[in-house]
Length: 278
Image (cartoon, rainbow, N blue to C red; front, side, top):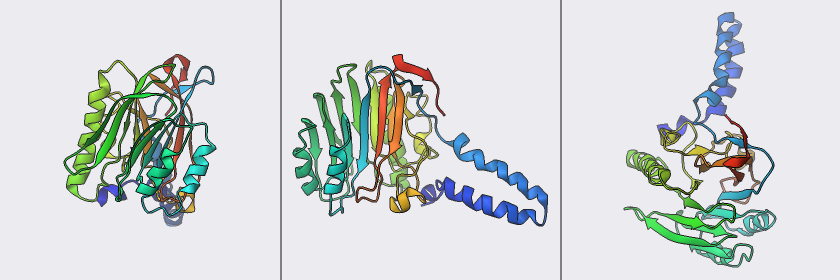
């Protein structure tokens, strides 16, 4: 529970901006606290490098649709209006699994629906190979596959760990994410890791990932909970990439009837790199 509470950085900044001027009525030295408002940017994990707008792009969407979502058509309609190439879907119910099978834009699919919060799917415009659906000791699956993108074949991992609501889940999330990064570090192909990681950029789950070759692609915009367009939320849905990738664009999607907001990231290979992001 403390792990979750430590990541409402924007809420803490807002409280600081209200309290510091009030305290300054007594002693102006309290205004020095204003410098702490930059800490969310300086304490978050590193981002991937930025790219220019030349060359082929790959658009990846990550969406936790909420297993209890009674109206998945909202997500399907939004997805049909995107130019996505690869889609990672979390909390796939049996009904949504049927709907995903009908998406002709994504002829290559791995869909493992469940009646709990750990149904999972990978949709792709390009052929998939070396497909593995790996379950941990708690029966929670993640998907690993190779995507035959014409520009550059790459590996993808779709991952949705348990929330860190108990010490063992907190530790297991960190260990599994590190293991995934370490496993793909020395593989010649680029890799992307997509999912609801139940971790923010300030979390211990991101410790050491930069050294293992994974960086986040988005900014610090909240994705959960989706109410009020995420203004009172935290960023826990992510796309992490290896050094071969550059970020052309990244944005948060609209309300799709879930408690999460989807994310979309436009990637390019490193030949299009121009400047680092932070």
